[in-house]
Structure formats: C-alpha cells, structure tokens
Image 1 (cartoon, rainbow, N blue to C red):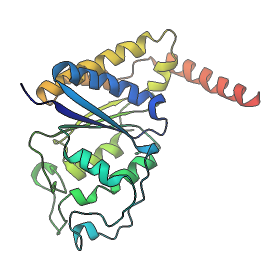
Image 2: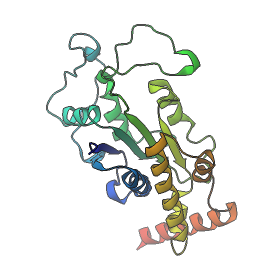
Image 3: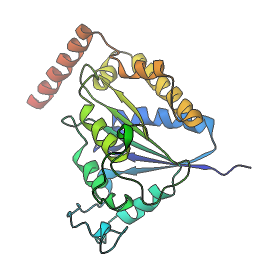
Image 4: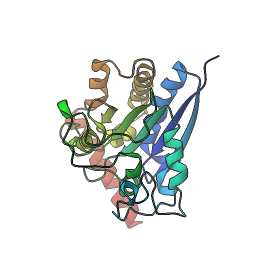
Length: 246
C-alpha cells in the first residue's frame, strides 16, 4: 500500500475561511485528493504568531539553515513545509502583490534556501536560489485571484517574485480574475462552474505536475463580459456605501 501524500495549504488571506481564493483552492485540493490518498493540513497565516524577518542573514551565516528568531510559529510551519509532498500557497492579490502577512511569512523562509554567494541566474531563468533541503518529488502550486476584470498584467508582480525565488518552471500557477464579481453574480452557477474547473486542474496537477493549457486559459480568462462585470461591481459598491450609512 502506497504511503499517503502530504498536502500543505498555506492560506495567505486575512479573511481566512471566508476568502474566495481559499474556496477555489479547496476545489483544487479536492481534485488532488481524488487522485491520491492524501493527508491535508491548512496553515492560516493571519492567525499565526509570526515575527518579521530582521534581515540579519544569520540563517545564511552564523546559524546556517536556522533562524535566530525564536518564540513564534515559524519553526513548526517550516517543519511542515519540509515534510510535505505538495505545497499550495493560496492568496488574493493585494495591491498587485502578496498580502502583507503572507510576505512576512515567506520572508522568514529564507533559511531553507541555500546561502547566496554571488551566483547569477541559472540558464533559462530557472531560479536565483536553490533549496537547502530538497525533497524528491515535492511540488509547489500557487493559486491567486483578484477582483480585477482581467488577469493580464495584474499578476505579473507576484509571478516575477516566484520566478526569481524558485524558478519559473519549478511551480504551478493558477491566477483568476473577477472572483468577487463572480461570487456576487446571481445564482452562484458561475462560481460553481469555476470551482469544478479548479477541481479538474488539481486532479491533473496531482497526476502530471501540470494541467491542460486550455484549462489554464479558461481559469485565467474573464468569466463575465465587461458590461456584466461593471454592473455587478457598481451594485456591490453601492450596497456597501448604503450599508455604511445605516
């Protein structure tokens, strides 16, 4: 009998379980669980005690591989990352980047990367850093969403960050626009259809480490027409303002 796959979902949304992004991510996880016998853990970053990195670089020098900051939740999180077979980082786009709490979390993972000694980018821009403790077969998926009407350009900043840190061919990314508007749109059928596509993407990722390019295009393209999107979002903000007056 094969050993269970360990999945670790790092939820970077301050909304925790109310996050629309984590709801889609759960569909992705369902797809993986359909393909493998899995044990899944969730880390809600905004609920963790995480002290910010001070930039001392001790983890690259005096205490190589180990952070000198003690007394918070990062040692446990780091251990969970190192023993996981599949790591999924889930977050909504905040101001064209990572939510602040997630950025603090990722900064504190510097010690699991090999010490930088002036090396240049690998050929084909594979990565700037190498893992200090590589785990054979370990996979990383990045799932992000935004309320913008399109995916083109708006995710470039976060994609570039992951490209430089671990290499553009070393992780799997799904980035979807319009998620807030889709959730607000009528009966919820659009949201359910998108959820099903995330589930299929998770299944394909589990089996192949990638997904059908056409499916990824479907996930990245706007689900609503510009007119419908505009009507829904204008109503949403109008309702928000009306609620504030009450």
